[in-house]
Length: 341
Image 1 (tube, one colour):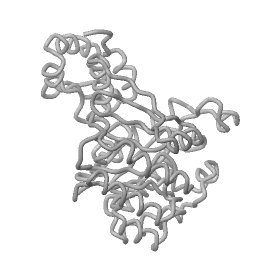
Image 2: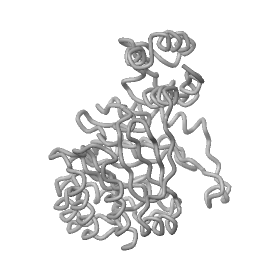
Image 3: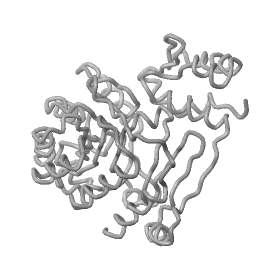
């Protein structure tokens, strides 16, 4: 663990200048960073501030499991500059947590949320998973209602995905796509009625509580990723670090960040914008399309969009997917993609 922390410090130095300061958001994620000692997190935050000045109002998020959340750690995280937690609750239902082999139980999940709020983390987020075997619509509603009653200002709701060549796939778990689609729509309905903005396909927030960090990805903003598998983007070049921990550590020790990269062409940037914007509640902005890629591209997109009148609506020159349309977001985006411009 210490070798990895040391390598992150070194990569910060090696990557200095990749993006322009000040830094508006910081996100500790992609694993279980709450396992790090508070001393390590404090050191990483200090090093970041030295190399990339952090804005005074920056959003600084730490992913944490409920069983890693204690009053002493919360105080130390807060003192280091962490001001938002993303808590991996997954479910408030004991059967689900046992099936997922989670280390926490439902009581710990509730307690973690309340402890975080008591420590001053007012923008915390939780993850919930739907479409799992045995999860009825009534069970899913109880999960959503519990989150609402606990006053969670932000929820990320994900459908269970069974990846090939994993223990889950080998166990023969069956995922019912119709049940997942139904629970997606039900969850969106319940949360919208409770005052949450469905601001991105998997994300819901009370007004003023959107994830600024994740929103920057969907808006195509530059970002720097540190660590194995981390991705970075400067507005033109996208790069990704090697995923193997040992190779990453070896390369960093030799003074080189081990990454591959691609320079995005105008048509690749256009297609990425189509894909990411359709995931958001603001939708695909045709005026931005015209000003950035040309009026002819806008005309073609408007014509193609006409085929999706049942799954999208036009509002102020924006193509916005309906709740049902969000179920087909990837396919609709792929159909709107350009091969050349």
